[in-house]
Image (cartoon, rainbow, N blue to C red; front, side, top):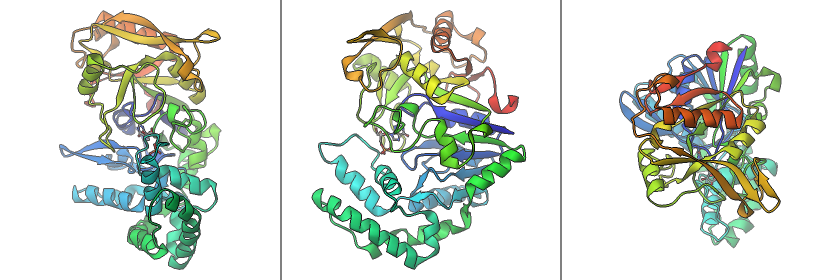
Length: 426
Ligand code: IMP
């Protein structure tokens, strides 16, 4: 049995696509457990880029099975659009995609409400893909699941109840309540086209693990956006942490062999919310440009800051991380000084813990490191890094108390220092 979780250890966008791609070589199954079309990763097919939001990146490996677990929320039109794009590029994604029949469905009114709320003063900077309202419906026990597309009459009845519940909200936000028929019509064809892919993905994953298949559980967003443990209320609406893999897929914790956390050598955040190590000015602009820090779903410029080690320690603890894949070290090349937040000064004194709920009253305490000017993208072993870069990397590793499994030194697949390989070693 080999079940390995890959989870974002910061605010998302830690370079999951590349690391998942490296591990996928050894994976028989790639299973997404949370989130929806708010995530996004860029696939390169025959030299051409395409951004997918729901289909796992493992779809490019021609023999891996890709699964969307029931903890994810699926916009049928988005998923069908992605499958068609991949088909047009000569892939046969439908043969290798399985989607949880119990996954909840994003419909047009979810997107409408998300957008209307984001136009008000209580906006938090969501991706406006309807993700939050869909999870709200799930918790309120009036959600629509993909299996409901098997009967138009049942689907229509369920949509009618949901619209009834949302109508006062839509009206209060100044929107126009859509008709039940319009909502069903809008999603019906896409929903029908997904029916052949539906499966009991919890059972399928358990059987795969028992058959000693290698299963990679791919998280979405990041630890600090987790609905329970993130910087609430500036969070997404699902369980982004590693524990979410068990509830989101429907497998027991004993099935997990290893958890890998992804962290950039600096930090980014998209949308609103506290970000104590945030930078502004030329250093931020440089990191943003060199690191191509623009949202792959929304195109928004990402907020940029120094690496936050109390936050990383928090992620190590919450996720039970066995190792960290440190990404984008190359982006820091050329900076005169590199900083790392090592602690926080709080009204109660200095702490090495992450004060997730009281960040506004805390000041980061930094350690400064001399920068490195050399291009590190050709390094394939830690010993090939300039001394300054290696000192910084080792400091991070020791300070957070978790070994590194990967140091990524460039966007290319081969631009990677691989120190251990959880799937191969499992
Ligand atoms: P939602 O998930 O669209 O509801 O957005 C809630 C918060 O999570 C916002 O701050 C988003 O910017 C953030 N978010 C959602 N998905 C991602 C992601 O894939 N990367 C980074 N931030 C994300």
